[in-house]
Every structure is written in C-alpha cells, then in structure tokens.
Image 1 (spheres, rainbow, N blue to C red):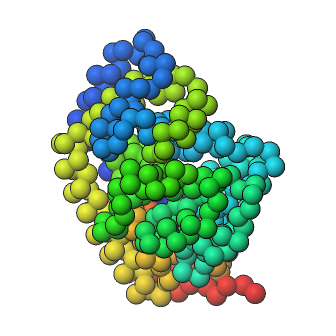
Image 2 (cartoon, helix red, strand yellow):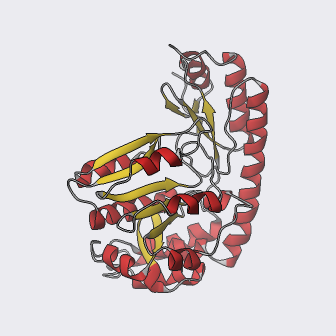
Length: 339
C-alpha cells in the first residue's frame, strides 16, 4: 500500500501553527515541573475576554469533546436518552454508552441536514440532551438561526440543547444573535466550540462551552482538577492574539476557496456533493466505495468512509485536493446504491 501523503480523514487544518504559537508553547516548556491551576480560572478568563462573555458563562476542557463529556456526566444518567443525528460526530454515541443512556440516533434528511421533525418526534420526559452540530459533521450543512429556533421551541426545558459549533468559523456569512443573547433567551442552551479546527491546534486539545451561569457551574463541579495544562494556556494566549487573528482570516479564506473549487470539480465529475460551510466536503455515495478507495490509496490520500452513506473529505492544500480529484477521475462515476 502506498504511504499516506495527504491526511484528509479527520478534518484537520492543513497548515501548521503560526511561528508565534510555536514560540509561546516552547517558552512554556520551561515551567513543566509546575502544576497548572487547580481550576482553570485564568484559562476561562482568557476565553471570556476573547468572546466578550462573562467568565461565569465559560466552561473549558480537554477539547470540545472533553467539555461535552463533562456535560454528559452532569446531566445524563442510566435510563435517560440523548437525541442526535446519524451520522454525527463519533463521540456522541460513545458518550451515551459511557453514561448508560439510550442513544436515539435519527437519520439525516435527503438534503444531508438534520431531520428536525423526526428529531422532535424522539423527545420525551427522559430526554436529557439534544445534540445539533451546526455546521454539521460529517456533511458540512447548516441550518439558519430561524430554523434552529423553531426547533428549539419544541425541546422541553428539562433537556439541554447542545449546539456544537466546532466549525462555525468557516461558516462565513452565517448570522445569529450573540451567544449571551442566545443563552439569555434559552438557559438550557449550551454552545460548544473548539480551537482544533479553524485555529489549527488540534493536538493542544483546547475546547470550551458557553452556557447559562448556573448550568456552567454544574458542569464545572463535575470536572477533574488540573484539567487544563500550561502548554494549552500558552497556546491559547498566542492563538487568540491580534496577530494570529489576522492570519486566521487569511487561512480560512484560502481553505474556503479550495473547498469551493474542489466541490465544483467533483460535481463536474458527476458526484453529488452537499453544500458545505466547513473545511470539509460530504460526497453522497451509498454505493460501493472499493474502486474509488483503491485509487485514493494509490495516490496516498486518506479520507473518511461511511459505508452505505458517503465519504467525508477534509480540504487540504492545493496539491492534496488535486490528488483527490485525480483519484475520483480515475475511479469513474459513482456506483449505484445496492438494493
């Protein structure tokens, strides 16, 4: 098998951290013999200042997945249920298993978006969390704020609405009220975000949630001490600096341009590709993936396969995206779905 040259399977940022970020982390290694803060008060304060929210609304943790798991530990127990889409971010069904809760997985609609009507039909008095990824993972599709709030009105106040916005920085032009406004209107809403995607520091595992102060405190009460380390804090300060913010916008624009080019080329080859406001594309491919997979592996391209459903492709640098197009071209048109 050809060695993997293009890692496009995990929605990672194609560019390495900025020199200023690497320098900040290197400097922080001089204090590795010291413990981080028992509770990440300073870390949460950096997030609060950056996002323009009160510190009491911030929960930080080991990646957005870590914060989500802390939320599950807080509000979900055996006999409860969690409503989410299928497919979705792999961690959510796993967290249901960890909590001993029923995973109510609702298939996506034909437009590769959440089937909100079907999800509403799964809600009951034992529903503790409703997960909505917007933009969605793995399809990259979005709902407008008006569509989301219409669904929110159907969610009982006893359930937490977990709005996973891991890819929100790529959704240029998507409009919604400020997070404090959202939370003030719906105290059961938790907005989950990460620096792993658009900020390109996935290995640092920096995630956070913004929530009503009372709910945020409940989650913090379930977190282990020393959960956020000095390297993460140093990286966070550098990543949210003005210098990094300017470069971030440039990189997002470059990735978006390559995403749109890649989608247009794939559509031209006859492959159905959902509109995306993320750093990846969803190719609807319910048929056989074998020939295409062989071509991509020959070219050293790693993507994510969902058997019987589709293929998720992270947007890489131009040479990586060109290799994807070559693989799809050589594999020919999509195979029909089996019956």
